[in-house]
Length: 606
Ligand code: G6P
Image (cartoon, rainbow, N blue to C red; front, side, top):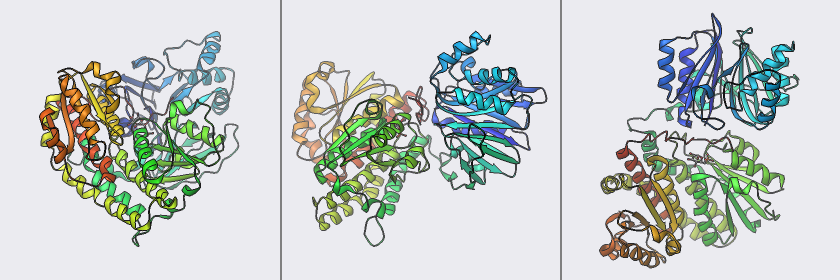
């Protein structure tokens, strides 16, 4: 999603701005631009598409200066075209913006009536035009910004650069993240702390309602009316070793292979050396709950669906699972003994964050599971359990998903114990089972031949169907999502029992059907569905253990043999071949695996 990078320094800044945009590129974007104060004054360069296009342009027409702003844009209002790319500017001011200005149509009308022409179709362009309008009325830069901020509705992070204020940057935050980093060379700003790692010794997360005025050796933060707000710079602890593919062809592949270590870190964090559970888990008021309401988007929501099966079966706690964009606009009753649980890798997904605020306003106790622990969701929920996935760069989430599963399984076990659904001995046995996951994952990741061969058969398909029953159903959802995200093959997922109520009409010899059928009480039911697919000529790819594969041998085209394991941990292990299958299909198709078209890592707009 859109990213901001800016700097006010005592050295030439162009390459630093490009480095910053590169560090933001994992979030997904479709155009980019920079503006800075050169000897000629305020200048900018913008280009549609990948950053190479912008750097190519800068080679042809270089820009040099010490103060500048930069932006990667993910189109919302207006197509991905150069004229819609940021920074937007007038002769007086250039602005880069993240978020959405909800009253832009009204502001645009007003500005057009005052004689201002718009170059772009964006909501963002209203900001520099409004600032310029106030400058023309005789206001100072600071007054013009303050008056503009007072007019904006919606969410924003803004950086602004003025032509006749060449050594200063202005930055404001309302609802969209913005972080300031400091070093001897001056100040850098970004919407993503990770982009500041190698440029800053100390950082400060701007808060909603903050307006910063920055020179290379001075930072003043006020509210939007100009009253001083005290903010402290803290040492930057963000870890840079996550950067780099470390020998893997793509970040996604690296992150798939990091999963054994991620699960180990999760277990090391939540299971203490003396065998007891971490106080953050144990102290949750799970025994007092009558219902858990889980809310999330995308892959995180599928982790929530897995948790519903676990919680209801193992802990006896009823669970609702909701997509955040639906939940936030529904009038859900909030019983007092219900807890709302929000799952998010980024902690910034706009719909999930809004759903969290909706639930908090309704008096619900809130718990969030987030990977980015300094995110808005982490700070706004009553309680937070960190996910120990480390920075995830691939747009298609992999290691964050299994980290969510492991954490949700621990939460289930804690709940089950406090609800007296399991004994202390059973808890211990389950924890021992969970401890086998990293080794089993390692073994699985070392045998990928069948998956590569299957991908080679699959990559020319136009469609795919994923089926699963019970807890394998959300795995089918996640498998199908991974395939469509990175290979652009249309994929649908269904509960296997629902097949005959519609999707079976699509089955013929051109339809690959991936059936996830771990051993257990539902295996024979899924086998019946598999036979229904076979009878209609579907091309069956079956994931099961050896006994399951043997039973279905006469009806199966391709078998992916899974190791023997306790049913408790099946979701963690059966996810891996689905991720790898999507990865290799995309690799054979030659798509942009780490930054698939139209997608963003962190969706900070509605
Ligand atoms: C985007 C990402 C997905 C992610 C979803 C939810 O769509 O591309 O990978 O699952 O957002 O993100 P969150 O950060 O809230 O887990």
